[in-house]
Structure formats: C-alpha cells, structure tokens
Image (cartoon, rainbow, N blue to C red; front, side, top):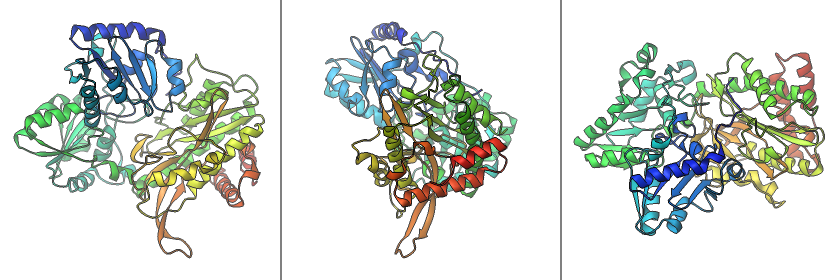
Length: 602
C-alpha cells in the first residue's frame, strides 16, 4: 500500500520542541531561526529527514514556513491550509498567519528586535527568498545570517537518514527522446553561459531520462547537475543509488560524481571565471554563495529544462492518454462501488481511499500514487488539501457530499483527478454550487485562445459563474503535470498569477471548486493537454485549445440542469458519451450498467 493514514506529528509537542530549538539558538548566539517546508532542492515533496517544519510544529501541509524568535513564533501557510494548520499546530506556540495576506517578510519587519541576528540554513532557502528576508531584517534593524549546520537538526535526536533509493533508466518508449539529444538541445539554449546549475530533481530526471524513489509519490532521484555549454554534464549524487544498469544507461553523456564533490566543482568554475546560469526561484542560496565567492559570474534565469520538459512530445502525450484510459477504468470501478456501498454506515474516508488504491493496483501498472488521496466526507471536504488520518476519519453519510482527489503514477503517465459525489440526495444549495463549479470547468475545457495567452488570462473563465453569486475559491484553477514525474509541474499554471504563456503539449489541470467551511467541499478536476494552433471556422487567426485527458463520470445527481446553457449541457453529454465509449471495454456487467446510467444524456 502506498498511503498510510497515521499522523505521527503531534501538535502537543510543539512547545517543547520550540523550547529546545530556542536553547540551541541561544547557545549559538542567535536570536531567531527560519524553518521552511523545503529541502535543498526546493521541491514539493521532501524526504523524511527534511520534514523539519512538520517535526517542529505538527503541520503536515506541502508548503509553509515557521519563524521562531526568543519570545514568539509564527507559522505561515497559504489559503489551502488555513483550516488544517489550526487543527495540527499548537497555536499558543505558533501563531498561524496567511502566507499572502501576512507575508513572513512583513512579520520580520514588525517583530524582529533591533540588533537581533535572525538565522537561516542557506541550503533551504532560494536566492530570491534570502534577499527578501535580508531586506526585512535590515528594515527592522537586525541581520539575516546564514548558519553552517542546521540548529534544528542538532535538537532532532531521531532524525531519519537521507534516502538512497536506486536510480532507474526511463525507457525511451515513454521518454520519446534520448537523453543525449535533450542535453545537446538544452546546452544550446544557455544564452552565453558556460554552464547551467540544475538543482530541481525533476529537471535532472527528465534531462537524463532517469527516475528514482527518494521522495514519496514522485519518482525523483535527489541530486544536482551541471550542464556545460558543450553538452557535457556532471551528475552529483550519492553513488550508492547508481547501479550498473543506471551507469550503463548514462554512459558517456554524463560524469557521475559524489554529491560531496559539488563544492569543489563550483570552486573550479570560479577559478575559470565561468558564467553559470542559475534559477533564483529554485536554486539554494548556498550554491549562489559558493559560486560568487569563488569568482564565478552568476547569470540569473529560468531553469533551462523547465519549459522543454513542460512541452510534452508525442510519446509522452500518447503515454498519458494510455495512463488516463487505464486510470479512468479504475476510478469508474471505484465510483460504481461507492454508489452501491456508500451511505450504509460501513464506508469511511479511509476505506474509500484504500478501495480506490486497490482498483488502481489491479491494473498491474501502478508504480505509486501521485499524492496522498484527499478523501473528504462532509465538512472534511471543505479543507482544500485535507489528508485523512485515523484521528480525523469520518464515515460517508447520506445527505452529505464526498470529495475525492486522487492520482496515480504509471510508467507512461501521471494522473490527477477530482470527483465530488452526493451520498444520497444533494440539497438545492449543493446542486447550485456544484453546477456553478461545473460551468467554470466547462469554460476552461472549451476555451480557445491565441498563442501567447497566459494562465492568468484564462483563470476568470473558471470563476465567473461563482463570482456572479458572490462566491470564489482560494486556490489556482490549474497546475502543470509531469510525465511520470511531479504531479505539480511548472512553469505553466492557470491562476490569477499564471504569467507563462500556454504552449502546445503542456499538460494542466482544470479544477475549479467551492468550499463551505464546516459543511462541504466541491471540486471537479480533469487534466488537459494544450492542442496545437488550429483554424476556427470563420475565424481569422489560428487558436490553441485543450484536449481533455481524464475519463471519468461527473455526478449528475449534483447537476442543476436549469443553470446550464444548452451549449454547456451539450459539452457534458458529449464528454459523458466519450467516457462511456472509451471505458466500456473490459468493464464487468455491473460496473458497465452503472456507467451507462452515470453517463446518460441530460
């Protein structure tokens, strides 16, 4: 089983652990410390030994930051986690703050004592973040100082060891392009730099056609790499991860070096007065500091792998279509099972998540879940990134909505899908809200737009029906998705802040929602791939659009037909007809009968 439901982080331990950290800071002559939810690679998923924020505070979300001073502490989370943080954290020790509305830099300005030394681990903060916090500390009359050796690690007595999962070659039938060709192509895009520093494991995995298992739910080999302008690359990795098969795959395209050699390699670049491209949004401050102190010229720019990785090739798109077909059958079997069994008192959130995982495992192709399943019944569904534990588990009761957001990792693709289901009959309010979310979902799915259009320009299409009723949701409408890589991938996204133009081959989610605190949550999510420019009948310019990849019924019991336009109803009927045609082969008679009813025309 890939998901467990125990929450070992105990909020009651927060005060004692904060006290231990403060004692260590005092011993070092420091007045405060920043604890981000990140590791040296700044990724969403971190290995157990890097879960410092969770160990200290109890908060288990995928993004956050704590600041501990001598007499106060705060924890900062975004809109996804405002409810979760209060349930998991000792709020008398760590005051919850909204990451956007009350940013850490402002808190530092307001709370850091004059003359105080606020410390940070330069491995765990990006170049941009360090500059922002340093300016805030200076404004408060204090200093922002790096530390050699994380003080929290010094008081975390049972901290796990770093992972050493084996590296596996990713087959060319799924990658679609040899690693040597990728490196040659990327090395030509360095824009005058002598080398590029790659710090994001998903970029390294994509560029070298390798996968790993150092973090949960995303097949990443934690490592660093230098890509030189001549096409040669150096991979800095714990060599225990690289077996004979991986060495044979990497061959002459990359030099494999111990991770401990990274400092010497950066010093050598400095001696050569090399210009090194680094991404200030993802590169650890430690690397930047080493390069500049050694005499290298740091050229700031986007990770050169990020955009090419996001624009999937034919093999990757064909693979994700196959993955979604397989995944859609598993999800449909689950929804049929749910319709037969939910509401009787013996199905709870954990049982539902386990059953869905079991159906995916039956495919024989499941490598992992792409994230912990969000299985939220009733009020738990209103917690946007809810993670069920044995302590929060609740039954699926009649008269309530059940939100299940889940995904899978297959060799040929990564899936992410959300369905909201009425257990019994949905109320009039629930049908109204669900249908407004559905209208937004259809607005994105049917969008046509010229080249150069960014996600922020499309985001309002998903929110318009909610806005008309004075409603909204506090998360983005869509994120990028990798190809047997991270389920959250940049640079593309559909959100109020999505500035990157969408390009053919990019995969994005389409997931508007609505959440009524203490009552229910609604989200409808499919994955889409951006289609090449095509001429619209009677139009003057070719337009991009979306192909919906996800294949699974949308609960008609929650749809208020009167709120849909005829065009929207036609889209839903056409989508359901496609789902029925694609998924029917291979389904058992009972599931097939359920599917035919679930996808009937309205």
